[in-house]
Image 1 (tube, rainbow, N blue to C red):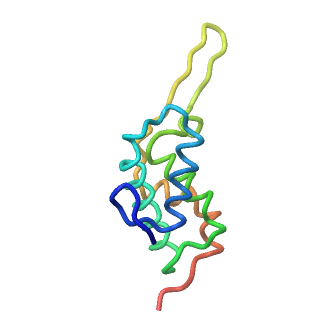
Image 2 (image 1 turned 120 degrees about the vertical axis):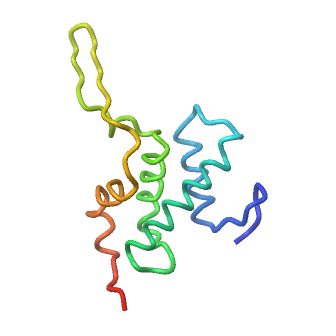
Length: 117
């Protein structure tokens, strides 16, 4: 852990923050704290789900994708209908419940899930 932006970051959180900033060019430096809060929240949800103390490196991109979903950056997941003639695009509700989001990633998370003692 080291201190950056007034917050103690773990290596994977800083890496996820940098990845999200790189992939989403509309973000500004003032969005950093909000992104970090979301990364931490999603990471905690993943760890609680898989019953582990540390996030396996293999789940790094799942952490990034879930954080982008929570923050609404990945609009492709929320398009419900596209009509080409006269261009109509409909979006489903963006603010998915965190539990629904978590279960949409079950396939990626379940191989790392341990039984609770």
